[in-house]
Image (cartoon, rainbow, N blue to C red; front, side, top):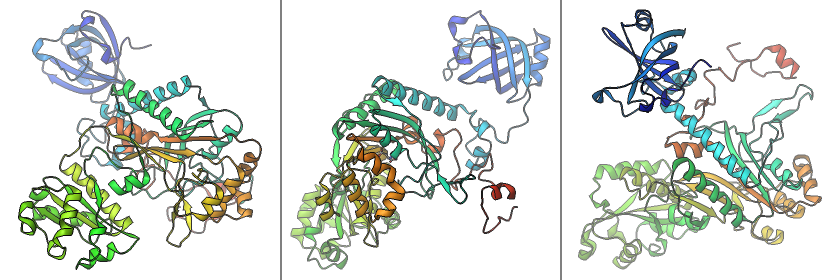
Length: 591
Ligand code: ASP
């Protein structure tokens, strides 16, 4: 080995020792007769000093530039008290260098690693191998590795078997578009990349493995407006003979253990709330419980008011009227309320009605609002009492289709929470349970809310009669408003699976074609089973305190699903296409 130590291993106890470091020149400062090199390696920095006492190495030190790769031998010595650097582990010492070997030179980098903040993401991703040299980003990958090791150890200790499942496979219905791979040997046929290992893990349960996990790559061709990536990683888990309570408790314990061992944090027990409750109170199925604001239903008080926006919604079963109280919000300036009105319009809200409570004791006169004159005082009082409004508050209202109100006020709740620093704690994990089985599409058809292998809470007969209101045995773990993982108890009886397919309008022929193997597997003694999958990228992002999953992936793709470093996807030779039996409709211009 060329080196004796990593930079961060150097400390006061090594005073006087001869050591050898290998790494990059992070910074070079020339102070006339002395040259300081900050040497960077995989886990830290160390300061090395060259003086004219050693003419040869001093001359080399004058020549090196940022990002040269060097090997340095020298002696550790204590820094004078005033020169210590508390920001780095080796900050109490420096190395007096007497041998300096340049292992490789470096041209000037396309961006400086110290002042990276102005560099566009596209450039950073194009030179990701340089971007990853920055300690700020490298540390995320170190954390990621610690997290996966911790999870693997925990699952291994609890009897889970790590099994790999195929990447070249058939479509898995998780609600996104598939990435397809043309088959050379089967002309005209395509593999799909897995959207998740869902069906394979269920088949492993049928095979009797009892406890499976995999840190699995998943592929979904989605619109990348939000912080999503076409390929991402799941911690995928499946078990047999456990019910949803047991699966939730076990995986909760896994996440608590992870936070404790990796971040030194104790998470409290996760509250469990039904889908219905979270939609009512937070307008979202992944509520951020750090924010102490809640939606309150008030339509019953507004059915007869002389204000059509309210009375119309109050009398339409597809609509909702919710109030959101912001304590102390009466002091919000007009401009800010206008900004919030604009903000909710993104979600389709046509306005943002509000009441400022200046002095409740003064009745209507104590309220400031464009709408109070249209609402009878008795109803107003009931509403204000229900939301707990006191002097100095503002109450916002949303009245529209339930979906619009939930999305608009749900988003406003988050925005107010962050804008006004209302967060009550740092970590708020929870479970959402009792999801509906299906969601209704605009054309009146239904699709699976989770995936079509999720077990309902009722019999096949009840399911067929209560399509819209049937509940599933699915559960989601939510952390700080982010869906961290989700799963369900699965259907393990053939008849139930066929009933669900039928309700989803998948006919017999299609059932056989797409899921024949699953229906077969369910015939031959499938155990009751269930599981879930965590989004590893999101988990690491939250634990690292990052804003985007791209910050915790080594080589993420851009917003347009491209790899700007490798220049993928790319045009391929006509010969290759011919072998794959592919004829392009339109040849890209670049060819
Ligand atoms: N396969 C599901 C998903 O990718 C997770 C699960 O149900 O276990 O969301």
